[in-house]
Image (cartoon, rainbow, N blue to C red):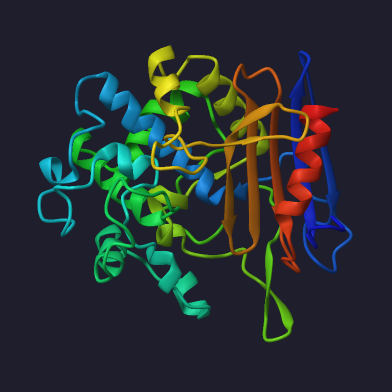
Length: 319
């Protein structure tokens, strides 16, 4: 709490066959009520791991090849779609400009509806930041295109594919894809962001701005169930999971919907972080899934949350 400036925090840890939760802070600034033990929160870019899992499932069913170009399935969507493969999207080596870099701090942008095609158009109005496959740079645009691929291949919405393939089979009852719904259902902590010298409650927002790159709402319990299932082989075959945890040859520490980090003690962890106004999220696990960590911060001062992450991750995985 001190190192991150968060208003509240909740964490779930599974290790050595035991699981426990902890919480700190308040559910709302100025209120005495604590953060809910299993409160809902916006998982932001951890959504990408769900989207990548669905595309890998479709690849395993022979519906696509990861080395197919985007233009094969979505002709005309990207000016350079005949040079960008599905794999490049999932590992952030496409060179597509990150549309969210052009979003402003205007509160209206957090409340309006965004079409995925409009988000892609924002990115393609800019040139590629590097030739496809030659470097690695994180871009939310990659996963908006990935969501459009899911819709094309399944003939259904991206949200329906995620529900049918992950949420319902795993019984993630507290996980939702809100679409244009601005509220967070069920118990939750409020998130804040500084604006003009004051803290503004940004709990209510239209998450369509993140869509397949960052829309999902979940809990630490549901994220832990998802993590255990993913790394335990319930969602992907061993070969597919190996593919998911193979780093981009273009550099960086990103596989397919997962990033990795080697800790000070030599332990390698896999997972994803998420950052959206009001909430920071961390999903982390060992490759064998035996030690898992799920964290949500309802942010306030938004100082340097990653410093707090590193301290906690070291204590959990190296302690």
